[in-house]
Image 1 (spheres, rainbow, N blue to C red):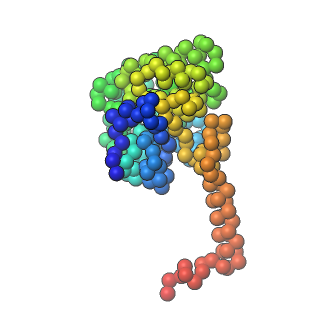
Image 2 (cartoon, rainbow, N blue to C red):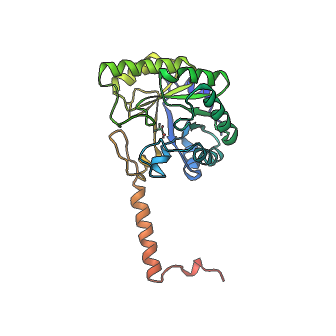
Image 3 (cartoon, rainbow, N blue to C red):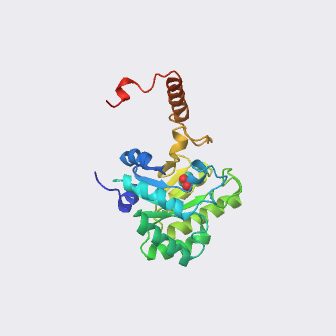
Amino acid sequence: MQKITIKKILKKKGKLPIVCLTAYTRNVAKIADKYCDIILVGDSLGMVLYGMKTTRGVKIETMILHAKAVKDASKKSLVVFDMPYKTYSNKFSAYKNAKMVIKLTKCDAIKLEGGKKIAKIVNFLVKKGIPVLGHVGLLPQTSRNFKARGKSSIERKKIFKDAIAISKSGAFAIIIECVVEGLAKEITENILIPTIGIGASRYCDGQILVTEDLTGLSDFSPKFVKQYANLNKSIEKSIKNYVKDVKMKRFPFTKNVYK
Ligand code: KIV
């Protein structure tokens, strides 16, 4: 099994789709690792696993615990650590936190949300040897709503400039979240690094989704998610059958008993 490197990710731009998913746990990471180029330990875990209203309350310590489990179970994919809100407010705190995170989790890269405003921070980290995945468009850590971005020409220009700034700052790829198709295409065609879309059309160089959304484990089903399974239903069915068996004294069966 050959390890995916940043060099390999860069080579795929415009040629082969880059496949990415989120993972927060060892069990999901083990499966995703077989098929994905990049696994993101996303701070979306605050909402998906812990029921928070936004990702702003996610602590770096929580992310570290999940990232350790994911990295340990991933032998092939590039594992990216999503830096939580307020852990990269300036270049010094960003470097201190990113260095600690990489040391403790052994993740291959970090992800930061933002455009022009954080380009200098990205550049500082890259120069210090920390690979950075950018994230433009809808920025969950600071957004007030989850509507698609880039519908007005002012917003479109701003997001385009953000993507250019992040690509020039040395990030190895950029996530583009929830933007109109034309803008995702324009960004992808005008920067040298790969774009990875989430709700940003097939024109991106790769795609990412939250695994709990595509497997039907979360309650989140926006337009841009294709649901490939209904794990919620499967788990409920298993639990109902177990409860029935216990109540009717059918479980444990003979084969489940030690003699
Ligand atoms: O936190 C996350 O899972 C993300 C993805 C949705 C890109 O940032």
